[in-house]
Image (tube, rainbow, N blue to C red; front, top):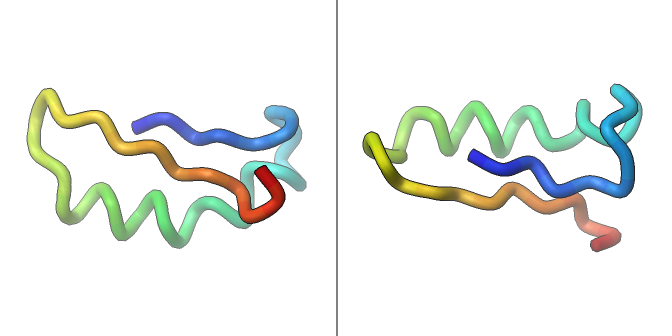
Length: 40
């Protein structure tokens, strides 16, 4: 999983967590998923 945000500050990454948690329940080993911030 790749989190794409303007910075790695918690304020930029925290909004991605719901989508990241959802992706963790769906992805398989070796799969790459990009979770992007809405502004990017």
